[in-house]
Image (tube, rainbow, N blue to C red; front, side):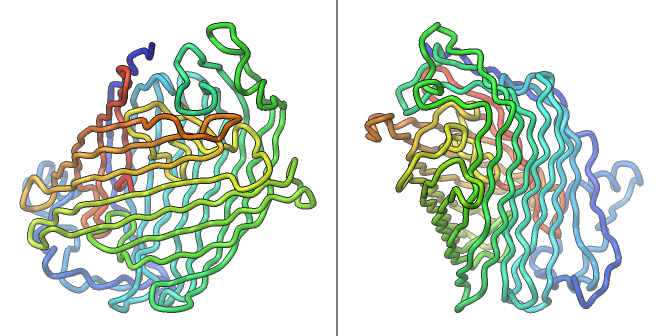
Length: 409
């Protein structure tokens, strides 16, 4: 039987800053702000109002000066079964490299965290658009020192099969895409997953772990090249109001590049945003995220798993790494709505479903539902960055708090 996953947020944010710095205007000009958003407020405005006792819209003018970027920093502390007590500093920065109406927002997301279980987490994700959206540079770089339980392969595993695995991990993914048409890009990249000092305690119920059956090693290396196609007509990837995002990545790992073995996989990530009302800002967001093994065998820790996508957001309702398999199919829908007219507060309701192939049959045998609700607090109205605080439930009593700076997808 699944044990209840109890997660309570102790201190969500200590302070929020909105950084603005002068830079070379030929490098980072800022797109003019839509006049419809002039009445919006964020936490910076609230702090100024409370502590200065007057309104302070912090340079919110219909035409934004060039040469600035907008950054949000949130120190936070919380508790989850996955991490124990944890302290995290999360920051994101949004900027434009063109001042045209079609320019897309470039973003950089950085987290630095340390947990009660001696976990160290330093992920950096970048989504950079060059001038006039000619090139899109995507980066996912991480260092983890990460004790974490794994529960075996497929969708039918139980928490009795929890196996505490400890390892150090470096990820380096870098992709360069070039425009080939309106909002369409093709390109390639390099992908490295390196795990070392891997140890395991074995299944809690004393049975042989799926990790051992699959092939336990103290180190693993996946090193390969990717071929990518991207369609993206969103103007703001931090908090999209409308648009379509389609990203496919065919990954080939080769021993001549240092990989332990040759293996191939396909990732398909599709997101659709439907603006239900321009005046209210309410949005219906849909997400499909699927990964399939094509040939060869990926190392156990490189197999698709919930919560191990780029932004660690799949599978709200379940602890990260609860399910794992060679193939993964994931669907999610979320309704985002405003609570206050000035967009300071908002809310969401969401539902998802996922399934992982069994091993060694590779058959899908069970669908795992998740659902929940959350609140949104606008941190930075210029980049439309929200603090996202959600509670999600899964089957057999699974549940927990999920926190993001920026929307989940």
